[in-house]
Image (cartoon, rainbow, N blue to C red; front, top):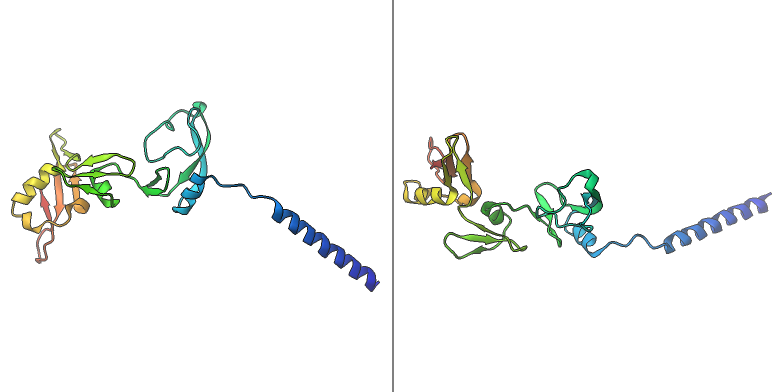
Length: 191
């Protein structure tokens, strides 16, 4: 009885070992270079619908051929980089739609007037392109607002406005943060 039990245990161990060796020799699904780049930069490879003419892994940072109806779409692999990030074909990068976004993403600012910021994919954003539009239809660019603010009483108190300027669409004014440490002062220059 004990020899039979030992034989059964040995057979189970040998069979289990054989199965484990067989499974380990099966090649896992190979990742493409872009899939690996997506994962390495913090993204996740998912599937999504995209238009028929587009190949897998479209560049999600640019508006492209993936905005079509479901009946004209097929499933492709995409890189989901998370909120406010997109895959530029090489890495997950912050979404950039304006000069301010470009600066916040850390891309280089060219020495020009007005200043320009260039993304790695070749897009250029010019300072002052952002407009604050009042309900009356009048508008002012951030660049114009900064020129006014710099020559006003606010000028010597301006902080890095690129991160701290906000359009108030209700009034059509730019609110630009100031570096004031006086009690009771409003910490914004409104232009």
